[in-house]
Length: 276
Image (cartoon, rainbow, N blue to C red):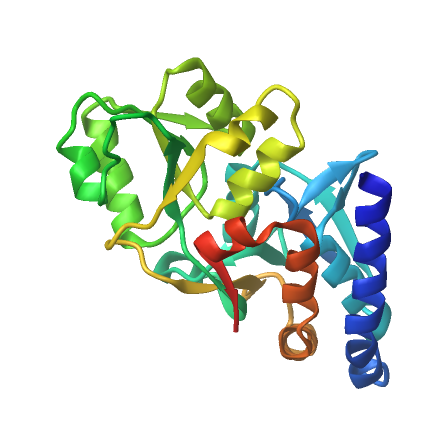
């Protein structure tokens, strides 16, 4: 019932965002238009009538209204988003977990905790892998991953090992990975559960996978901060600090987590997300 979800989302954002609006309303505006490219990531960022919607666009629009910072949004594939940020053509990278590679290009502001898990379909009589190492040791398993996703060193090393074994298919978005899984071309993927669940829920071709999915935490990838990077290259110090303070207040106010709870069910959130 999209109209009910949209109503609840709006109500929660208004109530939770009131403190945010009051806190930063007297702050000075940014010195220029802030460039915010985004890639579809479940209900966190999705496209409706050509523009980004979801948890993070909602939050950033609240911040823009409260702070006087004008923002322009665009939609790009995830790999291109990473490239734009690293080359200083994007002022922010959101959503993102903190990694050493990204730290070279921006200041990180944490918003919640997340973890990537293995995700696959339940199969009767089949014991799922309990670790990334177990996946590597089972040559029968094919893996589908999203190009541009980065969940830290263990994940990146695992992906490279799979590539050396010709056992990974890289796709531009989670729905493409889900279609491979439904066709039986891959058995598992790895990403934050909310991204995969939110992505397939919006596509009729793969929405029926939801009831058969299992989310499998692995010891190599632990809980980590998820949030937003502010560019060291494109933003001046004044704008960067102004945005950082507004984002930190958004995290403290609980507006981000409340919005997540409106878009996602508890099973998905319990598998890979929790508030700060």
